Image 1 (cartoon, rainbow over the protein chains, first blue to last red):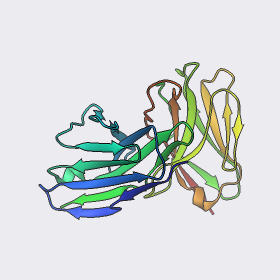
Image 2: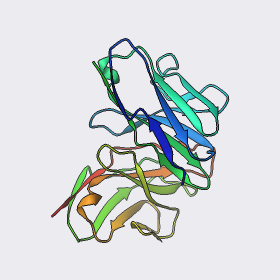
Image 3: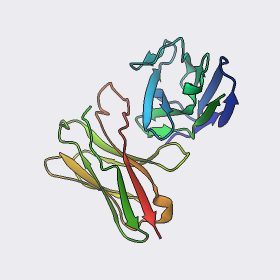
Image 4: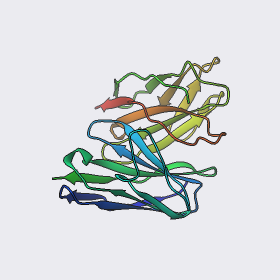
Amino acid sequence: SAVISQKPSRDICQRGTSLTIQCQVDSQVTMMFWYRQQPGQSLTLIATANQGSEATYESGFVIDKFPISRPNLTFSTLTVSNMSPEDSSIYLCSAFSREGGYTFGSGTRLTVV
Amino acid sequence: DAKTTQPPSMDCAEGRAANLPCNHSTISGNEYVYWYRQIHSQGPQYIIHGLKNNETNEMASLIITEDRKSSTLILPHATLRDTAVYYCIVLNSGGSNYKLTFGKGTLLTVNP
């Protein structure tokens, strides 16, 4: 299965600023996804990152707050914009291919102060 | 995708088999049952998946009932490192919707 490298692994940010998280896969994959995991909670899907087009967002998530890019079949970024303490969570990248199934990155632990 | 129901927590003694149940009574014929686990502070890890037959790999066994309305993940000899949240997910991976939707899962605690 694919191996995902996610950066940064953790960060502490000031409220009102933005953070961009990078997800690099070691092979071409069909689909890439971004999840949020709030403290003590399960994973919630934010959006599907579409290669060469706008991401598909789940209910409750909007592009202005979580802009996503996917310029090619192995790379995607998620930006958390205009952060507030409520955005403190773990953000995870996931990739799917028919050959390798689903793989997850190790996550970015974000603390907003 | 069909909804799943899992107990919120379970305990298991080290070295014994851990049997984690999952109810998916609304599963349809082309939906697979996937199991993932998440060890604290890590990304979810794939364990096993199946459609209708029982499956076994180096990590676990998956037993699916004949009516496919429930399944059991079996860790044959649980170790302390198996302490994690285990997620049962139903997914039609043969269709166009590849989204994995996570429920609350079962927190398995393996005790010495």
